[in-house]
Length: 73
Image (cartoon, rainbow, N blue to C red; front, side):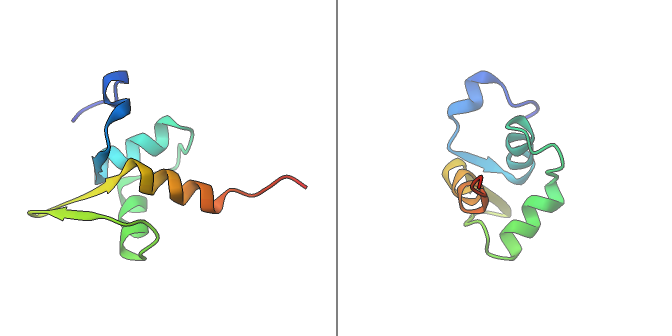
């Protein structure tokens, strides 16, 4: 997949590259492929392996964001 389009917004699984693009599209401009791989390797985000490719669910990424959100004081 090249760019994250509106039609792909309902996508449930992202490969590592598209996961980084998804994070960037919602404001995490520093998210890279290596960042997503680090989240996977440190077990911060659940993943699915299909063949040789790794996939991350949109809900896993959104859950990771929610658990790290800080509340205003």
